[in-house]
Length: 473
Ligand code: SAH
Image 1 (cartoon, protein in one colour):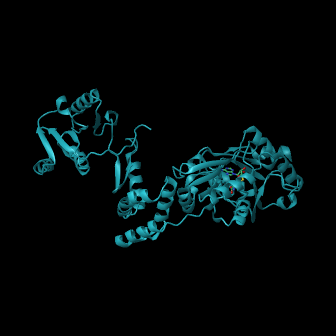
Image 2 (cartoon, helix red, strand yellow; image 1 turned 90 degrees about the horizontal axis):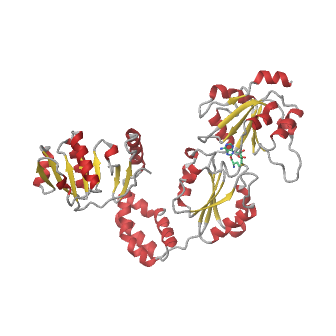
Image 3 (cartoon, protein in one colour; image 1 turned 180 degrees about the vertical axis):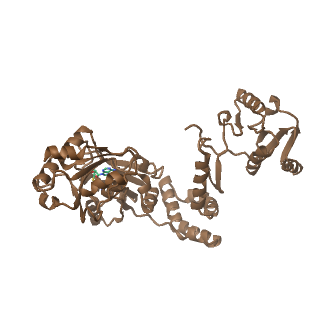
């Protein structure tokens, strides 16, 4: 973090602006809206400055900057069109450890003016610190559009209730639960409809008859890793939950979007490493929900596709714990899209099977024959370790050794890697390229389209098909 965002109370605080032109004017306007007491020094002043002086909002000094003018000021802004003057202001202010902003000269800024989205009392400040102002502006436009105008009145309303809520509801967690209920209630709708009295009445009622909050479990699919593949609902529930129980497939970028003060419990690590037994995870969810918590059980991909979401919900049933399920983009769909492999391109495949590479609990083999027919796509989850066995079984059951295959590691993430080749090369490619978890195997004619449809990340490392096929066959 190059700068720390702070919100500074400037009401009646002395601020010096050096410069009287249009740039200085812009800064002065912002500072006045925060209630600062302005002293402006310049040989000439724009019209508005004179007006502000008449209105008692600014004291103008007709002349040139001198370090004594910094005496007793909290902040200083160097806004002249003369670099030497700006530098002199910067040096003098820095020598006194004062915070100085030199307009359009970021290295000479001890503080900066961010773009502001104003829904007072809610304020959002954005800055790229001069590196990408257009990007910051676009972000601001997006947020402006996203944030409803009624946020300000809503925040004002709840602000008036804060002390009362503090006095009546004890404990931070209980108060937060109360406010969550308020923001999910018709209070918000009333404020939106500008019916502030009704909103206030409702809040009174909620405070007089607080509902004890029942716990709930949200079983949420987080997709394959790219945070933009989250559903809106997943994001909402991640923001609402008191506790997030997640496993290794959930990418750090996605965990960033969890509510800051939510508790985070990791229950799953990579295959082979220690992870919490399923039984214990089930019990954890039950205990948390029975303690009245909103629990977000965040899982990679889709919770019902090789995700044990069903088992976890079954465990909740005897305890009458409420639950919701939010689907996610499963690895097969996410990785195929980001690798440019249309799983059922109609010229190549009439069906697609999602298969687990893990052994069945009873040790029996899957139906290799049905998986070995051509013109169908196989997507194998958790297939890295058993790749040699999968390759050998499919080929002996009749799938051509030259069938195109792709191994997609970290699909949809910045570090995505794809290796393509033939079925006969599957296991050796995994070794050769040291592919690790999470990785998905895609087997089928559709993989050949990948060369043309690639669009995301590094171009795949491709084994030389035809030569090796001839050698193998
Ligand atoms: N519920 C998840 C799958 C869990 S099983 C889903 O619907 O996607 C775990 C396996 O999913 C991993 O071993 C790997 O085969 C696959 N997987 C999940 N995310 C992946 C990713 N980003 N890239 C490649 N494979 C992934």
